[in-house]
Image 1 (cartoon, rainbow, N blue to C red):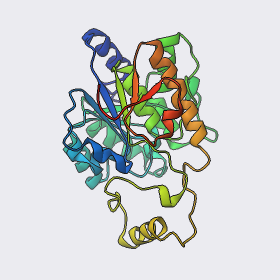
Image 2 (tube, one colour):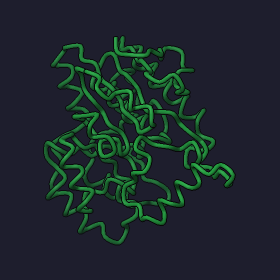
Image 3 (cartoon, rainbow, N blue to C red):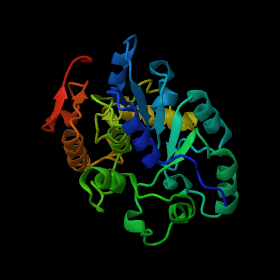
Image 4 (cartoon, one colour):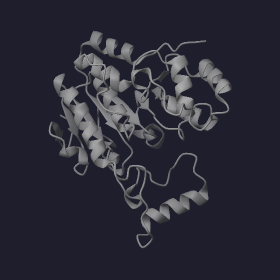
Length: 286
């Protein structure tokens, strides 16, 4: 059985060896990332969710952090093409396998042959203290066989505070893992943009909102109607009721960043992350 060559610990060690103060930016998918068009940024770009696919012109992206079972899925050809074309290092979580419980042996073989090496890094974000989910899920089997370090939340707290506990619980948005990665890489300052945390369907709009990976035409019409025809009932979305939890998690991560002397800057005037003491809002790069 192959083992992956990359790890979060190695990335952190390389960052310490580099020792040069390098800025970084975590790029979400909210419409306000259009502000980045034409801007010159000399630093590390971390795309989260489907941002590198949705907005390749805002790259090149150095890292693409994913954490879901819908997109991108590396064994789906069109998804893999997007991953390859991004030129980024791809960070995938075991949750990628959630919808494929009956195909795990062949998918694990595919991953061994195509998704290890310098381009891919599989990281954990849910199996704290090495414990499996209850009931056991596909992610547990992949974690047991292929990931040999603590979750990103545990690793960050271990490195900074010497604690075995996760600095946050399993986060409700991949944006948290993008920010955690930026801290592990010792980027400074860290800019955040495109992270708005909407709670209703009508507010859940993206940069290039007409684009949606793996979406059928009928589903697209339905989604856009619910967003733009305000007389229709507005449904809650996955983040509904979780905004305060997410803000609290960002605050915990920011405390770690602050302890390292890392400055975090929000480039959005409307992001709820601006409520966090220690995260400054600015209209541009320092």
